[in-house]
Image (cartoon, rainbow, N blue to C red; front, side):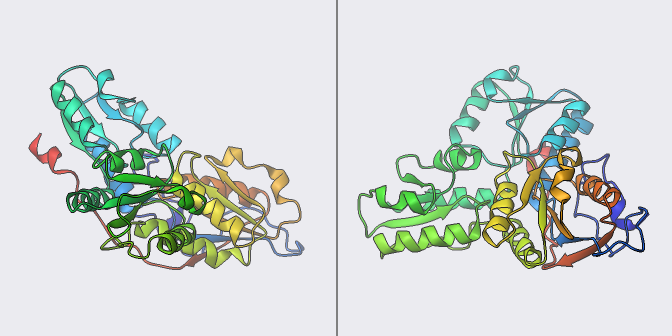
Length: 345
C-alpha cells in the first residue's frame, strides 16, 4: 500500500491531497499485455484551500456544538462530501427560513448576498460564514466598483450560487455576462465607466475570450485588481492540458453541479480528448469506455476528496491499468484559517 492510498478524516480528505509517489496500485497484470496500459494522474487535483476550510468549518461546528448544525445550500458542490456530513449530523437547507429560530447556520463556500445575512439576523440565527476568501475578494471588488459608479460586467453562469451572491452585493450595478456569445447584448449606462469581474471557477480560456470580446465593445473596460479565477481552478485546468496529449480517455472525478469539475471535462474536450467523462464515484465508470484505450488520464475537481480518486484507481487497476504515473504541473501550499465566528461562538 503506498502513501497516496491513505484516507483522511473518515473519507473527506481534509487538507492537501496526499502526494502520489509513482507507486503501483496492486493488481495482477499480465507480462504479455501489449500495449502497456497506464494511468496519468494529474496533479494538482482535488481539494483546494477554500473547500478544505469550508468542510473543516462544518466538522468543527459539529464537534463543538453537536448535531444538528444547519448549512445553507451545499457546503461545497460534491455529493459524497454532503452525504458524509449529513451522516454526522449536518442538515442542509435551501434558505434561512428552514432553520429553527436561534439555531446555528453555516453559509457555504460559494458566498451569499447581504440580504441572506439580514434574514439570518431577523431570525436570531447564529451564523458562521464559510465563504471562500477568494470569493469574498470578488464581493469586495464589486462593492468598490459600485461605490465608484461603475457598471460591473460579471462573467459567470446564470443561477450559480457564487454569481447570485456576488450580484447581491450591488444588484443595480451588475450585469451578467454568460460567455462570449452574450457580449453583444450587453448594455451599459456609460461605456467610459465599465469594469469586469468573474466567477472564480470558470474556464480560463473561455473567460479570456469573453474579456477580449468585451474590450472590443468597451475599450475603456477596467480590469479587476487581480485575477478572479482562483488559483486551484487554473492549476487543475493546466494539469489536464499537460496530460491530455497522451491520453485516450480522461476521467474527471466530481459532481455535475460543480462548476470547476465540469470545466475540467470541457478543457479536456477542447484540447483533443474526445472521450472525457465526469463521474461522482468509481461505480459510474463504464467499462465500455476502456475499449481500445491504452492511457487513461485521471483528475478531480477542487471539491473532491482524494479517497474517491483512489477508488477509481482501484477500478482501473482491476481492468489492467495498474501502472500509475503522477504528472505534477504546480505545487499548492495555500491554507486558509477557519472563520473567525468559530472562535467567537
